[in-house]
Image (cartoon, rainbow, N blue to C red; front, side, top):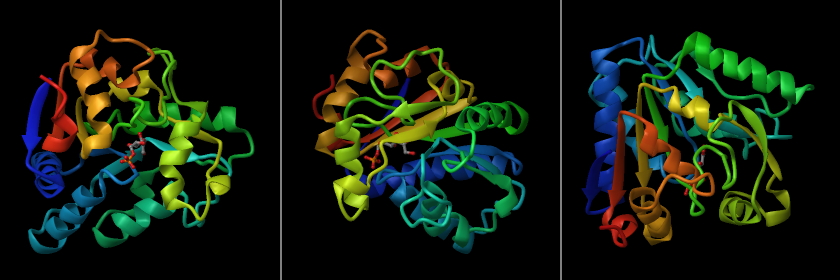
Length: 242
Ligand code: F6R
């Protein structure tokens, strides 16, 4: 695993942006795997600047997002569809028909999982997958205990995950209890993976990712089997490792 330690979140975001922009400049029809949540917000801000000020071109780029809450409409402000438009897609020259996110309102969710996994194979797999990491070590919404063999599937969110994400909702009650997520195996299909972690609350997960044996109770540890992973962590997230 390549490890990049940055002094703070700003530098982390700039580094992640630099890797993504290099990917897009080197291969203009790249497929990018994208994440939501707080961690990538700074990266997305930098990418928007890059598109607007450095002419990085997303015209032929496709994206596949990791996950979506079950039960939220695409236009719901808390949905990951809405998040991606608000924080990235509406501000870069990507074609909306080239952006893919699981449909959390599908009538048949099992069929939706199969359809999305097929999309990963047909459009992707991503040349580069951007990941955050949960305090409990989840990647995508693969909670501890998820098999490393999983493809896109439905997951019951852990209470700690719902609590961590409640900051984006009016109240904890409004945080959905389930999500559709790429599985661990789906994530590992990507050519390259960049995982970003900022802040002290991620320190235990990062220490475990780097030091403990791979274990399904620590979903991110599956990344140890991947040939091209870059961890970008700020000093606060890295403090307990090493
Ligand atoms: C989001 C996702 C999650 C988050 C993780 C960290 O699409 O897949 O794994 O990356 O929950 O969330 P933040 O960045 O909000 O701490």
